[in-house]
Length: 301
Image (cartoon, rainbow, N blue to C red):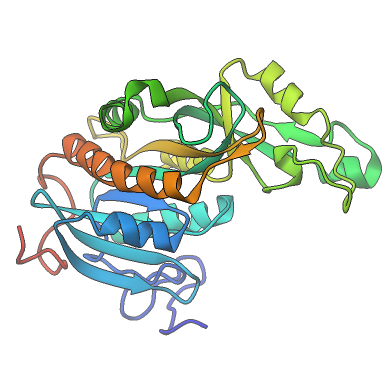
């Protein structure tokens, strides 16, 4: 249930200035954001900040942690899974943060390339995969719709890839286009007998359509799409929202292997500082970013 009275149906901010789903307000979230799905992963990665200044868990399951790293504010936000949760996160973060945003997603994926469990895939672009309900109800078209890839920010992606390669070894970091499915099962080609999914040839179709298809997951396309659709960048030297995505290979869909809990923990520990370093290199000062006055970092920088 909402914790504060909302003032508008179109832009639901409370009388205290908090967004409806994430429940953060101006000065609680930094322009530099690392977003993940799992709240435990967010807590683990945030533990590598030099100092934590703010923590909040919303009634919709979003966890926001803001702190300092090398003297600059960074936020870690856990959003759960799926394109809708990414939509909530990006839009409501934009509502309460002044200045440009740099957002890095660090998540998990299933590899459909040579990368195997325990490797990392950096997304150069992301394409959407959607269940075509007209096919299942009326027999119209293909069972799954595939959309044109949307590009990640090249500069931010380059920094993220370099930092991760330095941290885990370049031989364990791959790059390619990532499929953003609207479900974990049917739209990612997982074969089952409980539902009529008609997805037996989906992975082959994806590989045929996208030559550099590397992984399947559920959030990056929406992240990249909203960055490109964002406004307020006409008089800026670079887009108002810049995005990148790096994914731990949890499932090797070709070899049918799954990552061990130990390797997952190791990658999260290594990647935390690498991504924080990338965000700091991308935005090395607070000039032109959210004002310090009234923020949780007001007396810290």
